[in-house]
Image 1: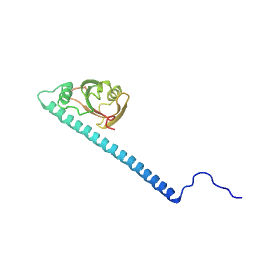
Image 2 (image 1 turned 30 degrees about the vertical axis):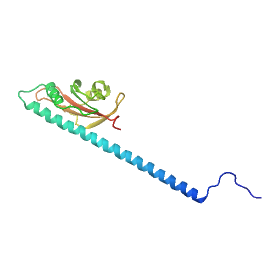
Image 3 (image 1 turned 90 degrees about the vertical axis):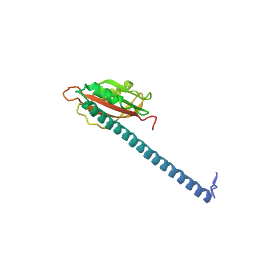
Image 4 (image 1 turned 180 degrees about the horizontal axis):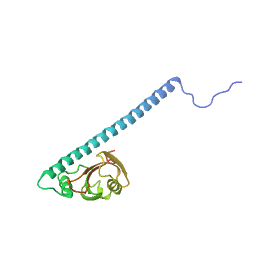
Length: 172
């Protein structure tokens, strides 16, 4: 008694071709995923560089304001530093005094005034918090990266915080 197979039977050449196509598709998927991860990392490095450059510029501006004339008020130092630097596309800058937002320069796509989570994080920073890049998931703008620089005017109790934030959503 013999059993016959029903259905379609594929030849050796068809099976080899299918295997080659499957391996090629798998290779392209892996290469595409690796490239996407690499591209994202490059973008993050670029944005971090922009944030750090803004922090350096603020530090220079704040130092220049302090050395001009008599001892300025902290709000003056922050306002003058923000006035001298325009934000890039998708970037927003803010000046806080003792955790309260007092000055803003902003891009229409990212407004620190509407970012409650960012303002809350800045408010909870200790006076001696180190300057570093932080990330925050905002319900209104998506992922944000920001740097916060603490500053003081000698002889004054207030703590000023310069914040520069960039929105990741349109970039990624």
